[in-house]
Every structure is written in structure tokens, then in C-alpha cells.
Image (cartoon, rainbow, N blue to C red; front, side):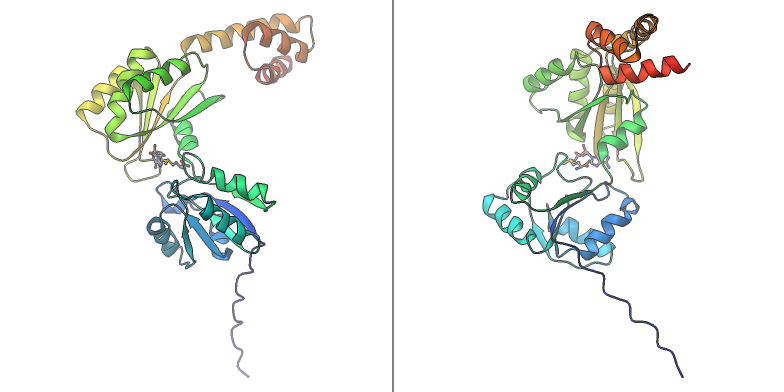
Length: 286
Ligand code: SAM
């Protein structure tokens, strides 16, 4: 008697809803197992550019209907997609990284939620967190502010608005605009530590840290290619005040509980109460 190999079961269909799926930002090996599973089992994929997503699907050996959904998609396109999510699993991807992060999808998620659709997000690659981890800049708090405006006046206004913020600042950037942005940082936020993270996860990945003036010189001499994340370290006094806050916490802990001490120091310094409480607990454990 000959045994026949068991026929592979077709993958089980996913329950209807919207599945927000992060995809690689360069290195295709970064696709998650869950992202592959969702893309294999969904009814179709809403994507920014069907050619870009078509290539990813081909790489994964998958073939699914691809529906264009981008910044130009109107209410009717959204309504059609939301309608189809009531009976089918629709995946949403962008050209690269996490959908909605400087990419389309916000209104689609809003409409889907309003329609009572099941919405879930499959996390994965993202240029912000990849750059932040690589830069060596303080990462306990950070502020992502999208792309810096291309016009000089608007760019200066954004930089001055963010100058007092005591966190690492993160921007998406493009090669042709990098040196102008660096020069504007040098002018408006002098003395800050700056990082340029380029071509993340790709063959020519690079992360260069220095002063804005030094980096302006470097990238003027070596015009940058590829995709870029620009990071600006917090103002120096944030570090001083972290040390001051530590001293203040120690003093307050002599007479108060950790929560009270954190509250007092938060009120006095404007620093984050939760972070101060965590630090107060650490100090008490020392
Ligand atoms: N949704 C994406 C994400 O999760 O990171 C970002 C999309 S946004 C339209 C594209 C910008 O992200 C690029 O201009 C660049 O600033 C940044 N970016 C994307 N991939 C990158 C990479 N591999 N290296 C550096 N920056 C990248």
C-alpha cells in the first residue's frame, strides 16, 4: 500500500475587518511572521502604490487583489473599502514601514472604527524607532514632528516652536533638503547634538552624529543619497535639570513618600511626574 502525502490545507480565512500591517523599510527580511500570515490570509490589500506592494507580495510568493488607497483617495473610495471590511479581511499597507506614520490611512481607520469594524494593527518596522535606537541620543522621551517644512520661514518657525522642548526631536527628511535643514538647526538651535540616520536596514546604512555645523559641511561635500531621519538631541539644560531633579528628589524623599516627592519635583521643574516617580522608586531602592 502506498501512502500519499497529505494535501496541504488552504490557509484559514481571517475574520472580516481592517488589518493595519507594517512592512519593511528597506530590508525585506524584516517582514514579521504575523505580517506574512495576515497578507496570506486576507481577502485583499489596500496600498499606496500597487507596483511597490506588488513587488513585496511577489517576494512573499503571494497573489491578492491590490486596491490603491493613497492621499488622493476620496470619501467614496474609503466608503467602498469600509463596506468591504464588513464581510472580508482587508489589509492596509504603505510603501514602507508602519501605515499612518507620515503615510495614508488615518481617515480610513477613523471611518472603519465609526462603522463598528474590527480594526487591528500588526506592528513592525518603522524609521523613527530604528533611527532613535541607532543614534545614541537620549530616548527616554522623544517627539516626532513629521517632515520639516521646505520653505525657510515655516522651517524656522517649527524649529523655534520646538526649541524649548526637552526631548530628542525626530524628523523625516529628504536628501536634497538635508543641508538646508541642518543649516537652519545650526542657526536656530545652536550647540545641539544632531544625528543623521540614512538608508536604515539597507546595504549603505549610516548614522552620523555631530554638530549641525559639522554635519552641514560633511553633507555639502558628500551630498546624501536615499532616505533620511534627522534627530536633534534635547537642550543641554535638560540634562542639568535631570541631575538637579535627582538632587531635589533625594531631598524630598527624606520627608515624603515617593509619590509626594515626585509630585513636588514635577511642580517645581515641569518634568514628567511619572518619570520622576519611577526615578524616586529607583533612588529608594539604592
Ligand atoms: N511609514 C514609514 C515608517 O513607518 O517609517 C514612513 C513613511 S514616510 C512617507 C517616508 C520617510 O520615512 C522617508 O522620507 C524617510 O525620512 C523615512 N524613512 C523611511 N525608510 C527609511 C530608511 N530605510 N532609512 C531612513 N529613513 C527612512
